[in-house]
Length: 238
Image (tube, rainbow, N blue to C red):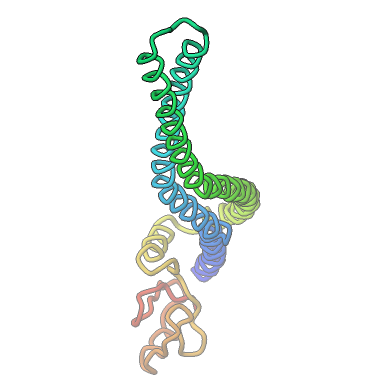
């Protein structure tokens, strides 16, 4: 049974290589950068939520002030048309209209000053939103590049995995099914390594030294005997 056990070690080599490839696939550095970009984008959007709300409120105030200014100017224009158009002759009425024109002028100035304050408050918010647009575009562009790089790396790694699995198949077919099942169970249980070479008195699976009596027993065991490490339980190939 030495040959099936040797095949088992070859299978273990392919399995270890597959595990390493799959780990590399799952831990591509681009994934970490992509996650960081996702966090940055989420933080950016969270921060901008308040900025947009504040800007929308200011924009609504500006629109309201503009509407009031336009209404006051329209009223003043109408009064001036009537005041200087000769349609009103009564001195008292003319004085009242003239007084209202002056009041409207002061009101318009006040409204325009308030509008200017709103516009000054809007300016840094608009600047922040524009800068955020540039930052977001940069994040999205880089994220797109990373997705492409990850896809290419996954394709290459998947190809390497398939090569290992193809090389493993004939080896697995040459090993008795009971032994292979036992090996695969140990592999799942023991972190990916189900079989290891016995080198001298040490198991290369757990890297521990076996007692001298155990090593002597193993040496005198029949070649076809399936021996396991007393320390870790892996199948020992000698």
